[in-house]
Amino acid sequence: MKRFTIFVILVLAFITIDIFGVNPANSETVSVTRVDLYNQQKLVKSVVFAIGLNQYFVDGNTEGVTIDAKPFLQERRTFLPVRFLSNALGVEDRYIAWEDSTAKVTLISKNRVEMLIGQKTIFSNGTPKEIDVAPLLKSAEGRTYLPARYVAEALGYDVVWDEATQTVLCWPKGEARPDVSAVVTKVVEEKRKAEAAQNPQLPPNLLPTDKSEGKPEEVRQLEGIFGIETAPYRSSWVYAPVWEKSTWDDDVRKLANQNKHRSYFAIDYDTKINSMYVNIQWIRNLSDIREVELDLSPVEKVINWNFPNQPDKVQEIMAYAWEVAEKTRVTNRMDRAPLREYFIDNRKVTIQSIGLCFVRVIVREGD
Image 1 (tube, helix red, strand yellow):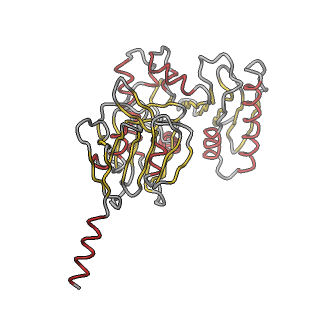
Image 2 (image 1 turned 60 degrees about the horizontal axis):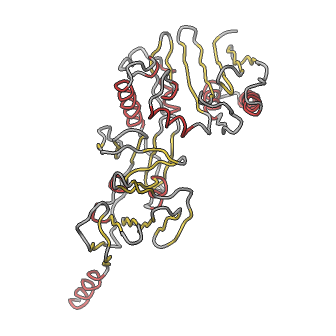
Image 3 (image 1 turned 180 degrees about the horizontal axis):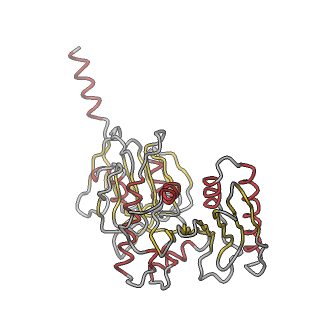
């Protein structure tokens, strides 16, 4: 038994590798790093990244981890600096390596992940997978940026993107999706505070607010459906993306340009007349909208929420909503489908295309 124990210890001692000429990422002094290929690090329960916010949130904690760079969108993918992304996903600095000669990043946790600057391939335990973006090297910063989705998936996480809040959620593959609604609320609040500080002329519907008292239960339910936070404006509770502000700075213009290939939604819940408006819109700096990708899922969510026991009516409404939106898109707004109304359970649903909307859906009480 004693000899067997000694043998096991010797075997375990050799289950390591030396990577010669490999430096920890962003380091210029260490030439050799020893990494344990069989490090069975426990995956964190959840991580939330937010575009334009220099914090990330771990395990549902609303106290974010502050970083000195902000996630950004490029080619419809979220990018973060290698160290911050890796640390957030449970990879320690000693298991992050950079190889100058090949411009290769190596991350080791439960899986060994490798990527090369400028190449649209990610290796997980030596197996290559083609992806649609490549790691970036920002020479001015001396930093490598990695696509969050592909790295997280390779390290053993499921990943979802929320367009409404511009957030990425990662959690261990195979486990139930965690509830991070408190974190998303904090993210929205922090973004609004930052926007308000940068631009005092921000429209009231986008200003940060603590006036949650008096918020109707229906509005809270609506926020939960979309993972958003509305703000009070006159008699309404309103949600709209940042590029709906009246003036754009360089950051907002860049964000608008990154998202101009697809539609977005805005919501207005007017408590005075008990009406809900859902707009599927295009970004206003577009002269030609024929190539915009339509997403009417926000309309479908609202209609299903209002009429959960009317699947046939929901299907009929959605069919016409798509017809209206498509006609506006393919004719580059030069021809609009006629307004149509539906009456369901003492409520009226109006479908139309107006202004910068592919389609507007209004649900109101009474006739």
